[in-house]
Length: 237
Ligand code: UDP
Ligand code: MG
Image (tube, rainbow, N blue to C red; front, side, top):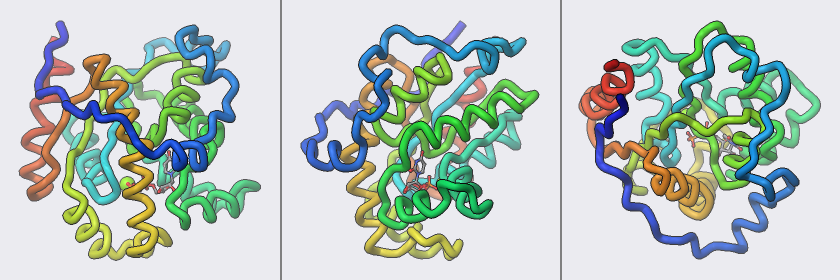
């Protein structure tokens, strides 16, 4: 039996930034027009013994997604797939798309969906586990649609870390991880992209009753005390 453990996110305001949307997240993925009919690839995920159980972990830059994912992994035994980390690994491995991915990240824009989804797909397919946290993805509706088409399933649920912008800026500027995009200019762009393109994804899943919203202000342990009961409920029976 599935029960709702936290209140639904009431984020229903439409994005006003259609220009941003066109510029940063073009519908280059043709399958996007047939969202409702999903055609999972033969073999791959569909042929796994146990279907994946997928939670998308969303929230703005610095909202604590990575920190909380580490705690969820420790407590509930998930595989943590950070889309940003997978892309940074691509850059570090000098792959053919590395330079383009680096430029995109420096600009705070969104890497083409096909690239990110394939990286995620490879990780899911090669894992023996079936419980996945997908952190920082999908970042826009096109990402979401590409995932659902290529992977052939929707996430089981979505965890959304709700954090005020000034708090996110403060955290990102003080985390000193040496990231090319943790500077004030790129952060401002990332925040714009988040509210224009990522909030519509959260709205979409809210309407489907899949979003668990968590107040991301507080210490990592305090925030985890909101996260823990949500995941406990997922695995109750
Ligand atoms: N990124 C992307 N697609 C993704 C995930 C990340 O294009 O699915 C890029 C994007 O430029 C983003 C950057 O990688 O700003 C860093 O993402 P990450 O999730 O690591 O950062 P966060 O938003 O958590 O600070
Ligand atoms: Mg992260």
